Figure (cartoon, rainbow, N blue to C red):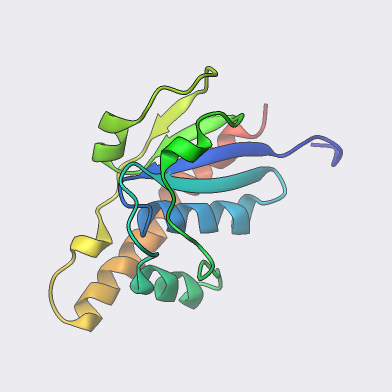
Amino acid sequence: MTGDEPRKRVLVLCTGNSCRSQMAEGWINHLLGGRWEARSAGTAPAARVHPLAVRAMAEAGVDISGGKPEHVGVTLDQPWDLVLTVCDSAQETCPTFPRAVPRLHISFFDPAAAEGTDDEKMAVFRRVRDEIRDRLVPEVRSRGLA
């Protein structure tokens, strides 16, 4: 990129848009913000971003506290360079977009389903946060080179 080209746009989809997709949006905007603009949505959005997702990302230096779960329907008419699903349910229920758009599916465990003590749940959020950074970000980065 020479600096005057527009950033590519990626939509990250999950079911609730409260954990995985919010963390992915945060990582992409934080690490790839010069080339990519990420937004996330859900097929059945939760009421709020999960507080442990916000905490896990804050520990890594990424602020997602302003995120608000929204329904994928509000994003359908926007131009996307990539649609990325991060849970199997969202992949199965992903709507058809009016414009042709490449899709990528990389599934991650839902940390909101973690059981145990608060420390044990937080460990799961950290693991998923790091997996998203290590597996998803390189895939998005590789699609921004063309």
